[in-house]
Length: 503
Image 1 (cartoon, rainbow, N blue to C red):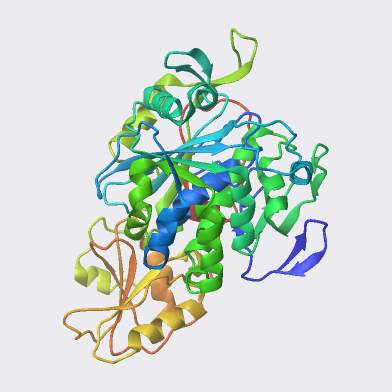
Image 2 (tube, rainbow, N blue to C red; image 1 turned 30 degrees about the vertical axis):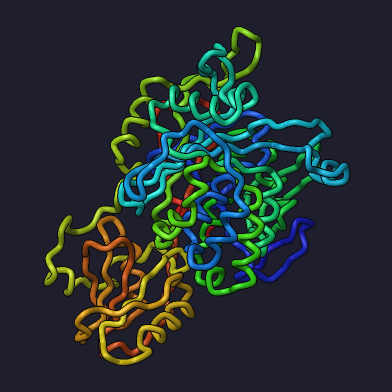
């Protein structure tokens, strides 16, 4: 397909960019749980923050830069609870618009103004499931009117300016009822550097964007953007739903950048991986306990794929609340918000597992399942696969990995081996809720059998009858979204895979 650059020139699409969103409103009026609300000034930091934390937590760089990482990451006493090596945890991510270090030219280029100081433009809670196989990202609109301990009622983003990281943590803990185990802070420049380190980001919008403040313009279509233009895209409010559209776009960009960072192409490219890690680490400030073992946590999350990351936001009761101070703010729907955070506290997934023909299929039933029995819905580019050699044939695992990479699958880890190595047929094993992705993998491997199993992700066990892979084509349904600026009491959520722009 072809895409346009920011100026509208046609260029040939390739794998150097990442596809984002499916429609102007993000394609993120999600399946059942997600409402995107943010009020003025997010500045694109939501993208940097989520990417900086999730990419580093999910890209498997422990083996590469443990000593270097420790020396680069700044730490702060944020008053967090800390956590065990395993178990569910909540990370507060704060995006800080810090301009002190910017030159006059940079401030003019980014249209950030010339004020000094630090301001929080974004707050999100990132929840890691107990087994660290799932990630849930909850956006907290910056204009949320809440009680700030010891300071009275203010917008939630005031907590940072009034008391730094400790007060931000305390405020979010009180507002959500969640234990905050760790704290991650990032600066605006991080977004630009991360996008450029990954080779740019491709975005698609069916409606025009004309931001008179920054001069950023896009006609409906698909564009590949560098870091600076991607920042404009992520922070603009120049569409019908203003801040609501902006949050949608930001979460799309996070999803696409996460996909790129977790892809085999990035992990297998030492220069790109070095650039990504170097550009990201230097812009992070984390709580002291996390600084000591950030990459230890990364190693535990290296198999997380975009199917395993979901996004939502706090449900709102009033998107145009007039505070006693005269400020415009938003009010949470207290009942719905309480239910949302109760589910997170209970470690319940917000995106329901995909329904399958049998909740617990027997090995025989799974073995007879036909990969082509139903239309495929998840394309190879969005599926992370682990390859295990089930035979005594030396190099068969590596060969299978290369075959899957050629078909567009993500295979981030080196192949492993089974014990014993006596498999004849090839198995595609998958955890509950991942059957759709597994069917795509099985369709690409002639003769492969599907089998639900207690595994953390999609796994291919190669047998002696393995004869290679074939190309699979997935026609994805086009999501339609009705824009709405009204409050939504029911939280909705969508996976990062669903957020990525449809090709």
